[in-house]
Length: 125
Image (cartoon, rainbow, N blue to C red; front, top):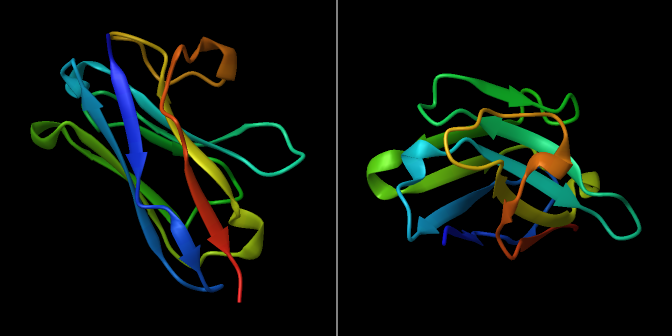
């Protein structure tokens, strides 16, 4: 059973940076596209970014383009989300997820069947 575990969240001031990690156990992460999602209080979960299993294809929500960078190190079985120039509106619980073995990144959040437990990111002065 694939298990995803996020880490790296915390409290940061506006304009600051954080790097989130999504580590996998039980399976080789290189076979999976990985998406990052976030959910703020009172709001629906939304897609932030996604990376193909090889790392050759990435995509981003308009709200984070130019500020966030997704990457992966398949040798370490880990996907990263580097978040720069953070804003208060980036405050949310961040989750990583995958649509499944050998599947590509998809827009429909309901296609993502495997989720981590989430990590809290709070941007506040």
